[in-house]
Length: 627
Image (cartoon, rainbow, N blue to C red; front, side):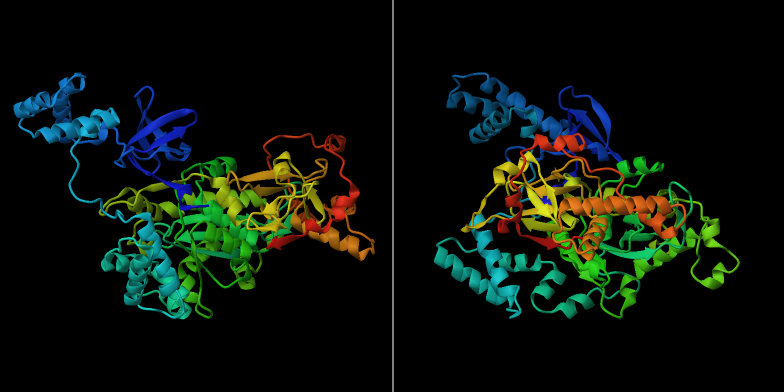
C-alpha cells in the first residue's frame, strides 16, 4: 500500500458517492461537505464517509480544479473581463496579429498577454482558467527533475542514514560527485540540506545507529508528548483484561473476562480504535485495532446499534506500544511498513512513556464497574459481590456499552489535560480549523487493504490444486494464471506469492494479486468444510498427531474438529470452558467475490486433483506470524 490510499478532502476534489460524481465546494463541519453534482450542477450536502474515491484532484496544468464558487468575486470578475476581451478573437478563425494587437490596445494590455490568455483558455475550455494566479512558486513545491531527486535520495540513503553517521556536508559532496558522473545539473547545496532536514528525526536516528537517542526523544516533558502536534501524529496502543464477566449468547451463563485492545490519539485524547475479544492479546488483536483506527466507523456503529458519531480516523504517523511480543511480530511490522507508520516501542522499565493510554485504561476500568458482573480492580473492592452470579451481558453487549460510552460521553466531556476542552472539540478544531488553520480531512481509499495489510501472512507458490496451508487446501480460478509461475528475478526458482489469513476464520485466505494490487479472497477448495479458527485447526492437528495417525491430512483434521465440536456442544451448558470455546467459533464464512454452495456435492464440479501432486515438494510455504 502506498500513501495514495488516503486522499485529502478539500474544495475542488471530485469524488464518487454511489454512481454520482460530485465536486466539493465547501467544508461544512467534521462530518460533511457541500458539493455540486457534476452532471446537474445542483448543490447538496454529502456525508464524508460516503465518499468512495477521488476522480480528479488537479487540472491538467497542475492548478487546482476548483469550482467557480471557490473564487472571490474580484478574481472572478477579472476572469470574466479577460474572457470578454479574447472572445471575439477565439471566434475568429482568421485572426491576424494585427487583430490581436488592436484588441490589446483597446483594453490596455500587451499583444503577448492576449496570446497567453487565448492559449490558456483553449487548453482548458473554461473561464476559470483565466483567474489571475498569485506570483511565485507554490509553498512546499519541489521543482527538481526526477533524476536530481533520485541522486539526492540515494546519497542520503547510502551516506547519511548509516551507522557511519556522515555529516550533511559529506552528503552534499556525494550528491555533487554523482551528478558530475551522471552528467546532470547539480542541485543547490541548500536544497540537499533541506531534503535531509525533511527526514523524520526519530527514524533517522535509528537508521544512524542511535536507537537510545531516538527512544529518549519521546520522553514526556511537562505533560506534553514530543511529536504529538496534530491528530494521529502519535497513537498509543495497549491491551487490558476488562473488569467484567460476560455470558454466552445461548445459555446466558458466565464464560469469563474479555480482553480489550485500544488505541488513543495523544494529541486530542480521542479513542482511535478498539477490539474486544475472548482470546488473549495477539497479533490479530493488534491488527484489528489498528485497521479499525485508520478506517471510518459509521458502518461499525450501525452494525453495533450505537447512536452517535465517531469521526476519528486517518493516517497514523507514529504508533507507540510497549515491548510485548505481539507488537513486534512480523505481521504488525509489515502492516506498519506498508502503511507508512513509524513503530516505536516504550523504553523498558519506563511505564510513564505510556501514560496517556494507561490513564484511559483506568477510565475504562472505572466505567466497567457500572456493568452487572463487574470484577472491580481487586478482591477487596469486590468483597461481598459475586461477579459470576451477577453477570448478565454478552461480549457484544459489553462492546456496545463501551462504544456508547466512548462516543457519547468520553469524547464529549471536558478533559483536564486539554484545558477543560473535550477530546472531540480538540479533534474537530485541529481538523477543520479554529484559532489555527486545520490540517484537513483524509479518507482511506481502500479500507479492506488496510485491514489485510496487518493480518498474519505467508508466502507460497501456486500449484495445480491451488494453495495449501496447515494441511488445508484453497482454490479459486483467480489463481489459474499463476500456476507454475517463475520468479521474474530468478527464472530457475518458482515464484512465491503473498497470502493473508484472518485467524478468527480460516475458511478463506486472501491472495495479494500482483497485477491489480488488491487482496482477493480464496475459499476452501472443498467448499463443504465448516468455518473454523486457526486455534481450532492447530488443536485438531495436535490431536491427530497424538493419536498416532501416519499422515495428517485435511479429512482427518476436520473429522477431529467436528468430533470436538460435538463434545463441546454436549457439555456447553455444564462447563464455563466449553461455553467460552463455543463463543470463539466463526459464525459465518468470509465474503468471496462469487458465492458458492456450501455442500460436499459441489466439490466434484472442480477438476479432481491427482493425489500424487499433493506431495510435490514445490508446495512448500513460509508462515509469517499466523496468530
